[in-house]
Length: 220
Ligand SMILES: Nc1ncnc2c1ncn2[C@@H]1O[C@H](COP(=O)(O)OP(=O)(O)O)[C@@H](O)[C@H]1O
Ligand SMILES: [Mg+2]
Image 1 (tube, helix red, strand yellow):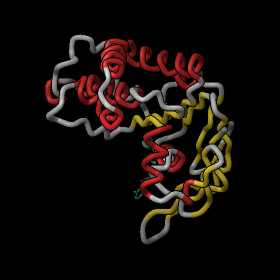
Image 2 (cartoon, rainbow, N blue to C red; image 1 turned 60 degrees about the vertical axis):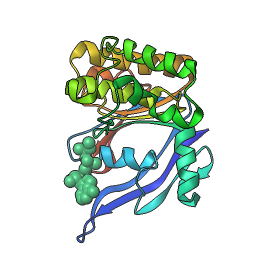
Image 3 (cartoon, helix red, strand yellow; image 1 turned 180 degrees about the vertical axis):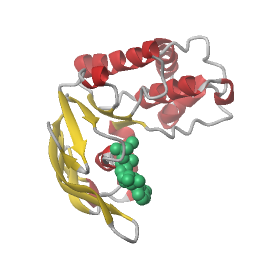
Image 4 (cartoon, rainbow, N blue to C red; image 1 turned 90 degrees about the vertical axis):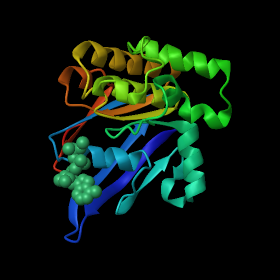
């Protein structure tokens, strides 16, 4: 089981500026991989593509033997819902729901069991939000909202977790708590964790560091 990228290229705009210039890489199930590189090097673009949220211009992404381009949108939704957790910079918490309810959103279609509710509140407590369970996003700081989004990404126990600068808005204590949790689920639940970071210490918590340089893999 793995994620295989086969000569991924991505261009944007009328000028067809090539942002990813041929990425071939395999990430095995159970790996923890950091993606680093300068701003504008293509990290977010690559993460969107390998997490199925965007399509490459050419090249293929295969996850657990399934060519993502072969899935229709319904199959793709199911694939994501069953296997994947996402932490992206625009986290879209629902303003009318509390922190706890936001974390529970992905579980709704599976039935809001007591077990899910317990896990949601455990996750929020894990990230220092035990006193914020019943607050709405507008009552939370940016960093608190980010931690709610991270808890939401974990509620379904995804096999693959994709995170774009998950600690970007967090102070060092909360950032460390999030990274420790990622490391723990990687070790104890074999969750594949793929994350973009600017933090050198956090990047070293991975098994492997992929460095993007101007749309190509620099060192690995
Ligand atoms: N949707 C888009 N349309 C046009 N250009 C884009 C788009 N997304 C990203 N880019 C460009 O691609 C380059 C890489 O962006 P990104 O992947 O966000 O880099 P990073 O995350 O490493 O900072 C940047 O020059 C950015 O402006
Ligand atoms: Mg980025």
